[in-house]
Image (cartoon, rainbow, N blue to C red):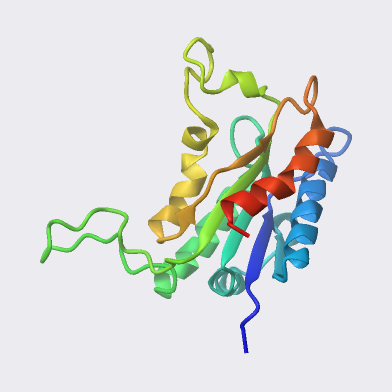
Length: 201
């Protein structure tokens, strides 16, 4: 009998009353939830703000073939609760050696590179994020703030945790300029096509 594949959706949004209630990030979570259900996946969800158990989150990661982080970019990073989540969950995965066994280097084999000790090969990770920044502020050396970097470059502080553990990182998806000129409706509508492409479903 074929095993049902699982996807883990992690919502990192932290509500700020009368400013950022989380409806947009929840909408992206819902689109992803419905997409994966339609493709025969079992959907597991974690809303960090509602609480979690680090050891249980490790098991969710191990069960899932696909892991998606849904996050706003607040002051140029994910909300602080996500860093706390990563520290606690990935430390649990390190100490139990379920995510990785060391950083990959050994004194016996000096050719082994830093970041090759992961045990989570075969899994895929993606970031879906919402930004006040416009799309035009990326991939353009003339832009004063980001100076030519891509969103993938910018999100390396998030994706590197997964790559360090052996997970394949796929192309991120972003909803830009959400407070001014962004086309949120189109970003939501186009999201399933991106999921289908990067996860080859």
